[in-house]
Image (cartoon, rainbow, N blue to C red; front, side):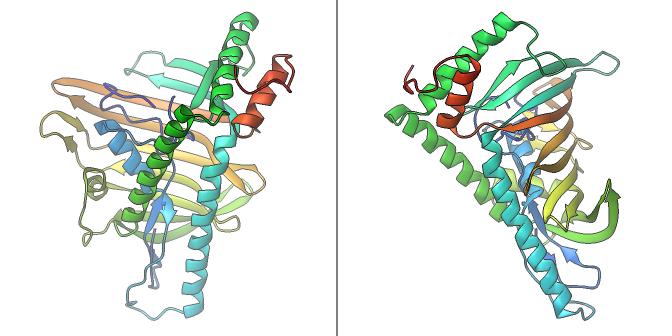
Length: 345
């Protein structure tokens, strides 16, 4: 689930699946016949201090963590139905957390289309994204996901080997780095906890997607919710839809839209009404659902300079590579080196 500045407003890549680590992207049920629900999504979130990061982190938090709360129903509902809904959402939360942890042991191919202005051709970048302990290492590849330049690709693999070798050690620098990651994860978890009461979700319908059936929910801000931070103040200006695969108890799709301009630092920066985020998620391995497509369309200004970012990213060829020590052995084998070499460079 990125970088910063013009970038100062440009939303973090949430999307991207690696948003909790460095380089580069959960709700509540109200008992009623309409099945009103409050959810909180997770999805993406590298905690950065720029306005773009705050917006992005907040939008992603809306679509990933789910908790249950119940108000007195206006029309009596079967207790068994309410219990079934609560059970489903509890499983969605548990699976989302499992997916979040597992995604940091899977590499993938990312195809990024960056549209900087209307009418101009998109800038397209295809990379091999490999978890490297304290970040995601992205190596340029051809459109087919294979090396376009064998010599340059090997140079990048050797850089990755050194990064993984460092990340696999247990020194002061490594401990400090992992402590920072743990802090970011806690900040994200805290934000997810706060969002539990920020939205009201209402069941709309069931829709087919391929051979699966998804349950669609609308989300709107809860007028009773009082924001406690800059990040949570954004919730009142966001609405959208979530789709849940009930059989798998997984979040399958999210569409979120900014419904009013979001300002930062007074007149310093602003994200405009109409900005939106879309993410599709599919089962990549048994019991694990990761993002396969993300779309971010944001417009705004920083000081007196306007910006527009339209970013579409597809994720494919997921493959488990493991934590740093395991990934290091895989990369050394790919380089044709002995996998029994010591971890230090």
